[in-house]
Image (cartoon, rainbow, N blue to C red):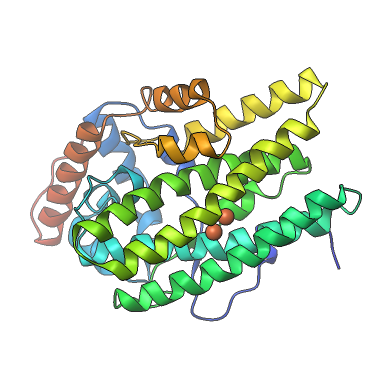
Length: 309
Ligand SMILES: [Fe+2]
Ligand SMILES: [Fe+2]
């Protein structure tokens, strides 16, 4: 079996629609309403292509190219506020993340045959957990009247697991992305409790307990693999910063601080993660731009003349 496989090699059945991540575009956005409107109108047809044939097609056709800021989900959503569509989108995003987390941990186990036995055992344990999470979220999608494959799948999680260096894989996947998942799960549990949905609250609570273990695997093995190697330690830290930055756009990140401390983050690291979102456009800027884009999109649909920017 091939080692070091890229995300293009992931097998999916016909229900899934693969799409490219928009992170690069989002990372480069300035905190300027007009500039964001201009950029989104430039790439509007590409965004439309990404969502074609999924449940987001109708959302795009209604709200225009920046629909995602008007239907934002996940950790950057105020607690207790999720429309049925937002909930389905979030559960689906987590579901494909769990599938890829299973694939990523499996690949990491396979790609580094000389790694210590304890490390392989932790990766195997993680596969077992992620397989359970896939089933849990598949059921939660059904619980929310959604369907597997109704939203496009981006492969950013698996892509973070394609690094040749196991230290950077653990940093990117276990510490950054699974750390982010802890924030999102904490907020989803609170949401479930808030609306009296014990199925969501309890199911996600079980998953969160496992994710803490996975973040801890990341924290401990990064420490172990970089022990006595200041250069490698610094490059892991820098990679972590870069990855965190690429996921901090348009958000006032609400960190699950207590859980993250338990999983091996330090207070200093958490303060740094919080400060990263300071360079990104503010939520108000994104919302305002998205509203302008929506109005221009609707005017065009109605056959009205829309002034060029
Ligand atoms: Fe998971
Ligand atoms: Fe995990």
